[in-house]
Length: 338
Image 1 (tube, rainbow, N blue to C red):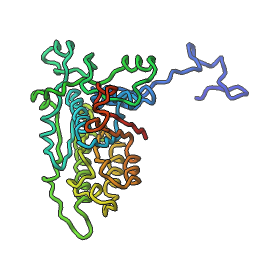
Image 2 (image 1 turned 45 degrees about the vertical axis):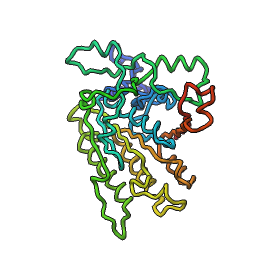
Image 3 (image 1 turned 180 degrees about the horizontal axis):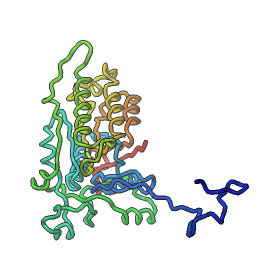
């Protein structure tokens, strides 16, 4: 029976149960707890580390799960490739699953070149039955120094960044031990192993990107990375590394002609990739040879289809290489947050 109400529609005080109040505590929705992740302090999104702590800070704490980071390659594809390796190495350390797609180098070759993590005292003294590496940040120095355009931020903000560091540090002079690397589950997509059959209606590049997207979709659904899938097993993160998209190695002509015939092939793929990740426990890093793409409007469309974008400019071969102001740095970086 409903409680009697007074003239203003409120329950009569004499009929209220004892020890009750009109104020009720709201229960917060439970966030998914996955090793190697943390919620964003701005919006509560689940974040993972890029493997470069200073880049995490620049991106607002890390990469949000379900998003795409575009890395515009430097001219020698050295530092962009290194960032991709950092991203994958962080996934190995945190026991995330990996997906590596390439058109030239075998994905296994990239995995064998992953930098070795710098073990702190806490990780070294963990019991044997525990994972070798923890997903807590260490206190070692950064292996790669980057001349950020934002390096002159106030000291208060710098102190905040150091107190909330996220991720690990790596020694680029050493490669990761096979025992550590093989502990992570890795899915691979090597384009030469997926031959495409050209037809009057489908170009090779469209078939390449379609096969790549289909492979990603299958893994996300079969391996339980779909957010809507029932939680039949512990949740994990899928880290996706796609190397040098848009190049001629993928059958694309974006970097070969001023007016490419398949100018919308890559943008169509990125649109499908972002839609797929939005409902998945996955995050992607995509590298593109932007300096070879002559159509700047098209490059702008590619950038806007990604959630974050960074452009790398190596000091090698430039006047900055001999400038004493940049003697401690190797690369300049511009960041775009969509």
